[in-house]
Image 1 (cartoon, rainbow, N blue to C red):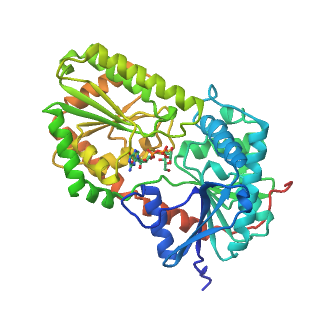
Image 2 (tube, rainbow, N blue to C red):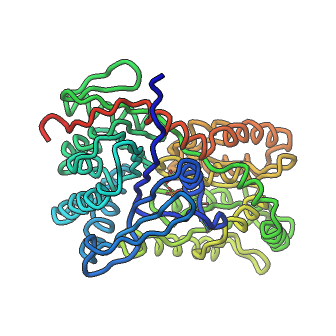
Image 3 (cartoon, rainbow, N blue to C red):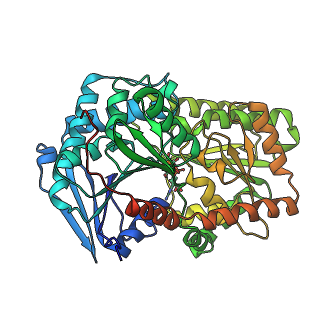
Length: 471
Ligand code: GDG
């Protein structure tokens, strides 16, 4: 029997871990940590620190059971060009369809490519051709082809956590052809949704002269790559347990006490322009204008931990949101009611689960989102006998599975206000029915399932260990 010997799993991502502290880890880290523990392996990435020697610094390794976490530093210049520059000022807005916010800069482009090369060069001696190497996200598009150039011949996969923009948008990137061409060094490329996959395949066909093959494969210049859809999930059982933990209970109770019978609406998002926070607040304001019975009867809590706060676009967004919330509170508040509360401090995952459980409505209204795990966490945290209602943007990847949410166009303020009104007045039976349907999806499509589906597909991919024809 020709059964491929299960190799070690080697995960590459910008930030690494945690492998243990389950209370802190997000669904993604939990899923990957489980897979690493099961197979034994290596998690490789950036240490989160800068030093003079940068990528030439000593590796730091921590070992837990059969799994090692190995990280290296970057220089200040690398952090600026690679992370703040190319990844977060160019690729992030581009892939979220925000050409108005994109900044291109040849220095960042150069540094991004060199960081990919140097991470590949440092990884190469740590892997063997029996391993399964799985690279994550938009920080490392080029790393696969760089690793091949270092001689790695084993299986090599890539997963993109954020959207892949349509070719019309993607073409705005200087060097777009180079970037997608380098992706062809991977044997398997995973996307969150069919639409993301289609955008990538269309780029390969129309811009690089490729064509479709049976299955999920495409051929471009003699190189065959599999491009498939693997929607990411959460550790649903774990999160549901968090939601009934004592710490969750305390937070749930606190929020209910503070609400004094008012219905609670929540939002939980990194403070990021892709999440549609401004549009969400405008939708809430429209609710208070058009459905005045809600005045004094609903509380909106937006948890928005600061993210990338050294970038101008994020500084501007924060100021805009604070201005908007202040105006809205000034306009509608009474002595005993403040409609909106925005918090930029984060919570533990257990506390968060309790907050979700106390909410009658959760608003997940990104303008564009790869998947959105908050939507799934909210569903997992609900009490099935008295569940809250999810309002979900049509532009979130999660929409493909969570069709039983109230789906909205986040740009359409009236539509958002009407969905809020409908959610706040939805009869118990309908809430239960919608929740039950979503719960099945969330408990089926877990992080572990996502991980295993990807790795099974990667294991059966035939590694050709070839570079793109003209690379
Ligand atoms: C990218 C893609 C894709 C938030 N506030 C707190 C807190 N969080 C946690 C949430 C959730 C996570 O952060 C956010 O995940 P999302 O999926 O919503 O969004 P991104 O960070 O943009 O993630 C996204 C994801 O990658 C995975 O592929 O779904 O589309 O953009 O888990 O709960 N956690 C804690 N305290 C907080 O205050 N502990």
